Amino acid sequence: MEETFQGQSYAVFTTVAGAIKNRPGRLMKIMVTATVTGSITVYDNPSAASGNIIYISASAPAVGQLLVIDVPARSGMWCVPGSAGGFNVIYS
Image (tube, rainbow, N blue to C red):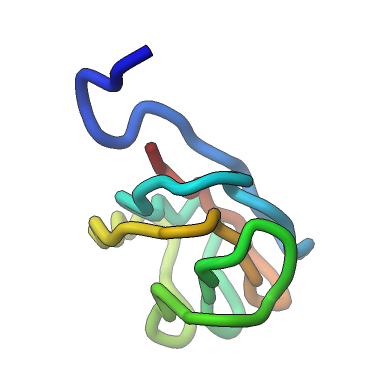
């Protein structure tokens, strides 16, 4: 199946780290749904917080912010959220 647009899926995060996608893809945006304490870090790794970092947010992104990123991930994507807050990671 061929993708017709970028950012067709999303994953919801609060304070627990986890996989966004377990194969290559593209990190498109982050939509903050509750003000984040700390920062959001995304690794080019499908299973752990290690390897190349493909995105780090500024500290304490506020509710309502839409962070436009648009970077590829060669292996997959793993997200480490801040210690409080919530956000949606939009990806392909």
